[in-house]
Image (cartoon, rainbow, N blue to C red; front, top):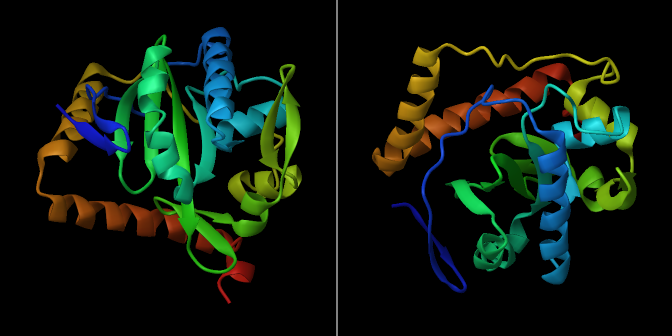
Length: 231
């Protein structure tokens, strides 16, 4: 059984296979999870901000995006241990770890809805990165509270800027990019890959992940959005 070393002892968990196209989001359950997650984080002085599709929905639709599948939040990699110390309290409140990537991504699940927490670390003086996903430090460091469905959450102050960085200038045009009609053989393959990652030699995992990170980072570079951050 996988485990995570935390300041409060080893946290054992059961791997849950999560993949793109897993299932459409249940907006009611997801928002209940997000609010409870916020309460626990606030109690523990753990700071996070809305990110990716969750922030896009909050800004554009004032709700979760109907064809999304999860909640995305970002945090500081330096606060990772603080978050790990919260895992047992999160469990007491119904959250379980579904997957953990030591590079800085953890997924927790409750009522069949999950939250991805991305821990960004310093790449250079102008850029943060998580698993190959870059984020300019100006968006990471300059945050303000926004109203999402009647609750205040942290988000980058320059909402238009971060949306254009992640999704391009046409970010206000909805695009359904997830397909929930995945054939059973693909679902089975996703499960095999997920479990295989936990048991294959670490040097092979590291090699594969580095390739994936490079491809992700290069996709931003080719769009030209990293030019001012890589001087």
